Length: 345
Image 1: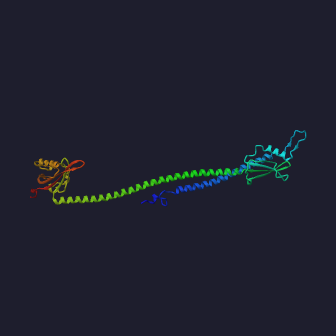
Image 2 (image 1 turned 180 degrees about the vertical axis):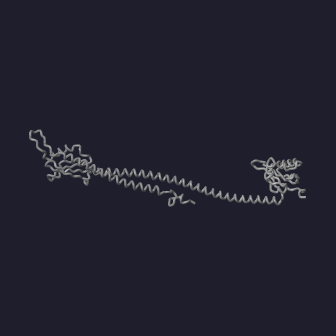
């Protein structure tokens, strides 16, 4: 069963943490839109400021004259000030020659009489924005003129539109790139979560198996203890002494019944060669019995006399079984010592 920490509460099972790329996408679009609007407004303001400066430059260029220059002709007549419109137009064309920006229409009208014909006019654009026209009254001597500029309709909007489109393009690219990166990270995170869940399930299964093995071990240990206790009870009831010898016939384990049989404690006999307990006259038969048990792999029986703690001879009936294991082969002997008939008497 998946835990809430792994799946993420409220997250999509297909793509965990889906809110992260969606949040980045929404935030990127909002920030891009707001930035685009701000830069669009700034670009429009800058374009208007440039237009106003260009208008003021044209005004300053014409206002620098305190009065109109005289007309110079080839005839020997006195010089006279410029009075007719044609001459004024020619003079204005000389003043504004190559100085009117290409995105602005310039028009100069006289305020001395009502006429729709301008004194001077330059047309650089066919689509002027009349809502952005600027007018300035200029006085030169006794003449009063009106200088009017009309910007091209695209002069103010083009920088704003370009800024708007550029910001949106850059913002969309960056937002999509960040969203894709976060989606890939979410997929990578999901793969790690799946690996973690599988490892967690494996750990739980291993833990369950370990618990089962512990239970089985407890059951087997109890059964082994019961079996050992049963064996000890049977040995005690039979009155026989059980002894185990190693490959060199040295005494290993010996049951407590040896105290009744030989008046010796089991601890005193541990590690003692069993030959020292056998009466010397019976040693050859004892060795042959051990050899026969090892070769024939069957229980061998022999009647012996052993020496007790007082060096008295104790008749016993010995049964010998050679021990083997699959790893080391021959590993020793197991003996059963039963008091003989004379001991009973």
